Image (cartoon, rainbow, N blue to C red; front, side, top):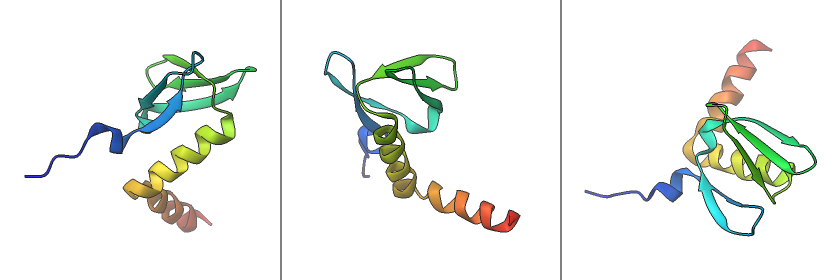
Length: 81
C-alpha cells in the first residue's frame, strides 16, 4: 500500500512571521489584498500571509492542475459557452 503525504494535497504559503505552512487549497473561498493578502476559508476562518494575491492564485491553480480539477472547470466552462 502506498501512502501519500498530506503536503501533496496542499499549497505551501508563508505566514507573516516568515514561517512556512501548508493549506488545503480546496478550502479557499476568497483571496484579497487588504493590504496584506488575506485568505478566507469556506468555514469563515481568515489566514493572513506574506505571499501576494498573484502568488496564492498561481500555487492554487498549479494544485488544481495537479489533482485534475483545473480540467473539470475548463470543461464545464466550455459547455456553457
